[in-house]
Amino acid sequence: MEDDATVIGKSAQEPEEFAAIFDRHASHIHRYLARRLGREAADDLVAETFLTAFRKRRQYDPRRRDARPWLYGIATNLVGQHRRDELREYRLRQVLVAERDEASPADQVAADVTAQALHRLLTEALAALSPGDRDVLLLIAWEGLTYEEVATALGIPVGTVRSRLNRARRKVRETLGETDPSTTIEESPSNG
View 1: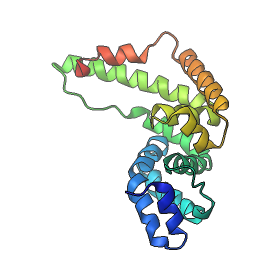
View 2: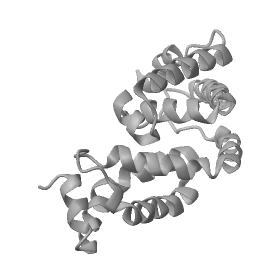
View 3: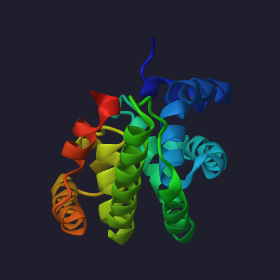
View 4: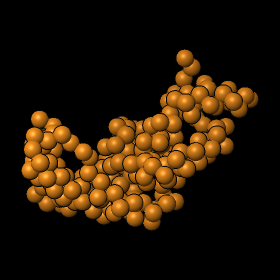
C-alpha cells in the first residue's frame, strides 16, 4: 500500500486518488472533532477538513509519509474558528455520563454522581485553558499524537508543545484540586 505522501502526490494529477486519504483518516479526524465540538459539528467539519486538505494538496510536504498530523492541524484550525461554540458545547456535554453495569442501584447512583462531578470538573478545567494549551493537551490525550506530530499539526516547535502541555497539565491539576481522576476511575465498580 502506498504511503500518504505518494497518494497525495498522485492526486495532483488524478484528483480521485485523494479519496484514499479520506478513507484512511476520516474516522480519526471525525472522532477528534466529535470530542471537541460534538457529533453534529464534527460531521460538517470533517468534510470541511478534507475539502481544505484537497485544496492544499499541492502544498503538502512529501517528506511527511503520514498525512494524519497535517489533517489534525487543519481540523484544529477549523476548531479555532468555532471557539465560542466549543465552550458552549463543553458546558452542554457536562450532563453526559456513560452507562455502566453496576452491582446494585445504590452503586450505580454513587458512580453516576462521582462521574458527573468529575466530568464537570474536567470540563471546567479544559474550558479554562488557553486555546493553544487546550489544543496540545487534547491532541496528545485524546488522539495519542506524539510531541512531534502535534508540532507538525499545529505548526509550532516541539519545545512549544512541551511547554504548553506542561502548563495545561499544571492548570488542570490546579482546577481539580485534590481530585485524582485516575484513582476515581480505577475505584469505580464498573472498571473492576
